[in-house]
Image 1: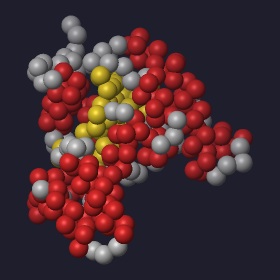
Image 2 (image 1 turned 45 degrees about the vertical axis):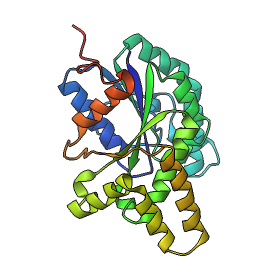
Image 3 (image 1 turned 180 degrees about the horizontal axis):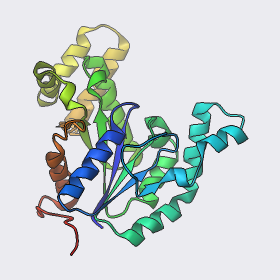
Image 4 (image 1 turned 90 degrees about the vertical axis):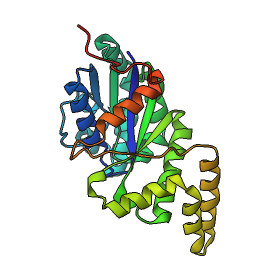
Length: 258
């Protein structure tokens, strides 16, 4: 087994769509993999998961049994799912794929900032490990919003202890000038800080100072442009994941075993 890829991001950032598209790409190039759905609240999936947390927990039963609202029920379901990690881990090890791709819950905070996320990292992530943090371009157009997403990405990295690749998801919806502006902030991060400081306020100044530190330490790598809808950027994404796992030394890493 080469490694595990955890797909993270805010609600609506395209995590599930990317899991499907990347799984399709791996299949097309003959790479063995497993798709793991760890979102107990999702109603439908565009892919057939090899392991599905909904087989272990039922959100509807939790709603019926417990006096909880929808958000509380999701939290309870994710926490309950964590008690089945040994079974999920055994299934992965028995199958022994080259790559395991974990589709995380829609609400980032339920996974990354509660106990379930680190438990998944420790229990079912085998081989090398990396997280993909999806930057939703619909939320990244304004400097303050982009800063918030980058700080979330950094916080998730610290919380889970994983190397993180930032992914500019839904790249197909960006106009060329929007794409160039966003990428320009990573090439010249001081421009993002300058934009934030043009707006008065303690919050903007704090965000600018935090980002200065994060960029200075190399904590925010430039994002990869990926479109799950158009199947764009998947080969580049796989290449970067290979470099994370294998140092770029194996061009066809993970090819289906004969």
